[in-house]
Length: 250
Length: 96
Image 1 (cartoon, rainbow over the protein chains, first blue to last red):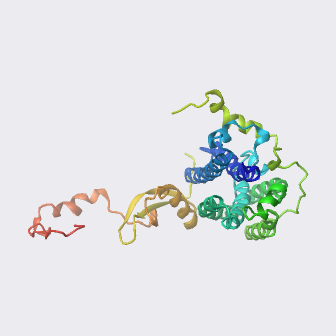
Image 2: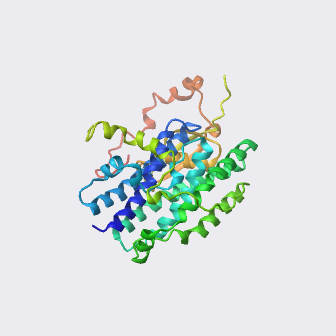
Image 3: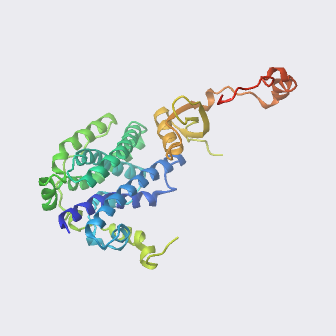
């Protein structure tokens, strides 16, 4: 088994998986019906991406299935970014978290389409169409709420300021990132940072919002198996049924 | 009653494929054109229902009133000669 490639695919799958779980929790809680359907559609797209990458990881592993990877791993075996673990505090948090990840996904998948691993390249090409739309949506909302009322501007800005501490993690490369980039399978996250900042700053400017200063990462990274205090509760809910009734079918 | 703050009501029309007519599929609430278009996409075209969307503000639709029904529609009931039912349709003609 190619351990680095397996690890890399877990990362690619885990961030969309955890975010889709968070979005699933938000079902029926959006400000209005149309938005409720739209945001859960985004969640379903992300779940599809997670499934594709975890299925590939499972095939590299050889004996585990994608379902087992999603529902039977322990917290320290997950490789997701901290940003997607943050709870749905209010619509502003849901939206800002989505916007930050959408910009990242657009840059990341665009580069990953050129992966020399044909499965990774294939999944990326399929996913880029989805995340392009996700970005269009979340970007519109940021501008709409930034330029909306005093209250909407205040709350979006608050969520931006609060979530900004999780941004630097997206651009951290460790040994596996470097290895995968060297063989042409993966992408350097650090190389995406300046484009990410430009895109985000330009949208926030259009919205009449301000971009916080860079905050160096002081937490241990999600891709190394260290997670926020929110993660255990999220997994408890996500994995509850498969753990209670192993191999249940319906 | 609380004031309705869901935004403008839009009627949604979907075209199954290029060249076919747009058909009414439902309605939605949105605050402006862009949001209405995104919601229409998410609500009505996620399962390959079509690849064209028209949106019309419900307020802009001029609709017949049901009180006018008798004067409006009944007189066409008994005029069979207005229908081309006396012609034989050639074999192979579609979409009639």
